[in-house]
Image (tube, rainbow, N blue to C red; front, top):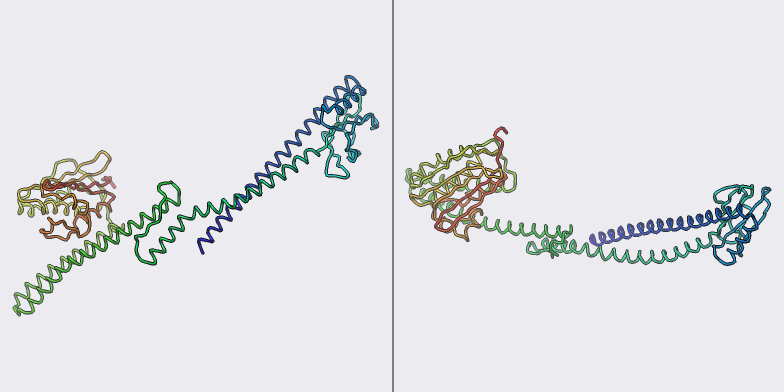
Length: 460
């Protein structure tokens, strides 16, 4: 019903605009044609008046009479009214074409004026007359009927009227067809949305006509892209829930088993140890949930960042110092390339967690006597670039695209203790700062993680 009303309104608006435009165009054309024809008649009257005045002044009235009679009889000149009035307004000469007797020429005075009008008594016609006073005081008058002009305009109105009616019909029909064609993608979009609402499945897509540059086609493309994103998010949410359920099942079972053993043993020391284990597992669960919340806030743009000038190189030194003991236990060498300070405008605690997670990953998955190298530099395009490379086993090509997914852990990493959220958190925090992070890796040849952040003003 709504679609029908929208199509009807668009068709009516199109028809109204088309009809009004047609009326205005025809009106302007008619006015220009009428003005042009009137100007032509007036030019003929003026030119003839000048010619006859010169003839009268050079050869006299008899020569003028002969010239008028010859021209009217031979048809060398259009049919004209010619009259000569004496000083006392008496008629010295008059030439009136046949059929013009009902023009009321008495309304034409003897004054030297530009154009006067003498209407016909029995029909819709006017005799337009121009007068000129000659050197001897006589008045020469030349006039022309507007009948031919009126006939041409009447014929023009008839022809243009029929053409306008046909054009309006074609315009209205064309408007209906254009409206229907224009609204077709919108109707298809409505059908897809109704199908999604009815079934709850987001697999349906609006048919696309390709990159035509049309606004409606662009809307269709954006809606399809949005549906793809929604479908992907739903799938990711399902996978994340599965992973959460899987990863929570083990610590919850461990909590329950520990508590049951403590209750059954009746030993206070065993109960104390069981409480310590339960606390550790509960902290692990809380850490997982908090990390998931932080990732969600960062990805949705609601994470609050207390920005300040941060020296990335000094922050990396702090992180390396924090992980010195862990690296020493695994006999992993951690080196930081020397260089000038690199300052960005960001949240110190969030960035510390980014580099801590990357360094923790590098140490965790690098074998004994391996190495992790960190560098911080400025890129030519005005960004801070931090790279963390390790000599670990690397990441397979099939796992590399998914390492940023929440709770995703490749087969090789499942032997190490972890939540599977570290890299997801790294990506979320980096993007919240307006930066990017990427990984390059080959199996058995190590991995290199690159973080790019906008450079901040140290004085900000």
